[in-house]
Picture 1 (cartoon, rainbow, N blue to C red):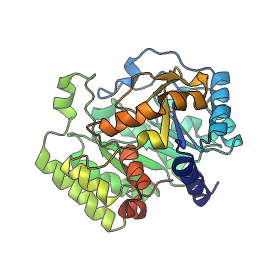
Picture 2 (picture 1 turned 90 degrees about the horizontal axis):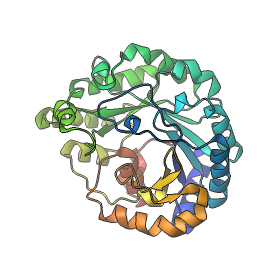
Picture 3 (picture 1 turned 90 degrees about the vertical axis):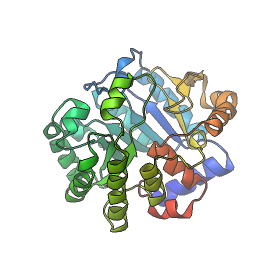
Picture 4 (picture 1 turned 180 degrees about the vertical axis):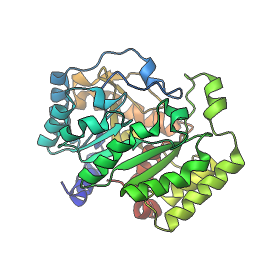
Length: 322
């Protein structure tokens, strides 16, 4: 499916049919890392069976979903991942995957039905501080993927107090790999102890602003940063100045099959096994109201796509993903 055709289908689904276009699915319930700033691996949850996922994808196709995104907790730990991606592809969906990359080199040959690959890379020398393992353990998989995939691999960096001095080096690494890179600030979830945020949360406002200004200059100079300048300025200022349309764009489904509004508002609202049509009719309006009344976040996927949803010309011009 070409990017142009995907864009047309997305506009038809979101603007005419007024339904989300992306299914963001927590495909797995276990992780091989235990990052201090993440609470997904701490939750003991069941996961949908392969048969249930196939049925969900069939129903998603009928509903108009055009993109299947597999993520959290660690998708590459799900043995049936290739079959699930193949099924989504057979239905005409674009497929994407967000991974920590620890098993990427091993499982890369199985990912024939994957269109977009995103790997979490929060530092080079500081990677161990953030993730608990050395960066050298994931770099070979990223290098292999960058050579194997037709579309550029995306490195996704969460900005913390630990890695401010490495942001430029990460951009240069992405350029050397032939990859692209995205940035977003650390979101301080209330479920994580405050001591964690005091250690890795952005507390040095001066050096944070200086580092993100550097990213803006690199973006203007043509380095492979996917974020729009509008978004990077919000990250620099730590100010959420956009209207959220996340529920108009994507529908989030947890590992156990429960629908939630977004990564911030994760209360279970309905069971996706009841059908997309029923779930959307039951919860769509309330999810949109929750997003509209939210104080805001700076998750780049929500922010960039919400601004594109509102046809922000600078974002449309500068946001480079999918």
